[in-house]
Length: 266
Ligand SMILES: [Zn+2]
Image (cartoon, rainbow, N blue to C red):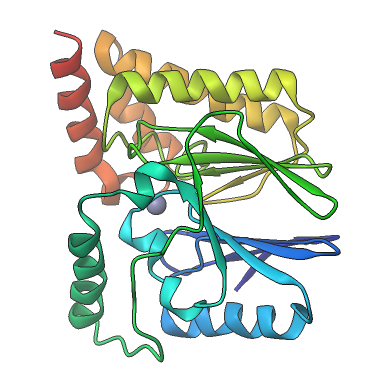
């Protein structure tokens, strides 16, 4: 379903985990992130692309390799794929695709395409790497910590920051790969805010924001959360319970975070 639309930006948001698919249109290309989740939702996105693409090229940026973010890959076989070289070389491709299969089995989901792991055409190997697509300029920042193949993209001249599974308003930091990397990546997001004119922050789950205050609040909350994880003073768990409507559903990740952070900081 539609979540946000302004000028050449359209953002769909799934009924599952408020997962977003962002579509940015320019004169020469359409750029999309992570088409997801359910068959009907992906069909809606597919129809939108078919209606709007005309003779332009379609690019998909996969923000990271969690299965919910690559679940729609098979429905867009013509797209040129942009992702980190870590996503391209991920050793667990088969396991990730199997998780999609398991999900569809569990919920009796029929799809009119075969889920596949994305084949990366444009691998991002260094932070600061740039691609120009017509009048758009994309600048990439490696963003490990959530997963080690995560990616930030800045789209200019529109000032769009695509953050994948960082800086959400509905989730605290999910540390699936590395605590220290996560801290560094959040510091990178501060750097980006200070060095680019960011007008839209589009996270992989939750809401788009155009408010600078809200963007800074999300960054500061992530910093605070990461710090509190190792300080363990105060009552981080109850703060999160108050702040996040769906905390009960993600509580176990908070305890995993605590374990990872503690182990890394011993
Ligand atoms: Zn996610």
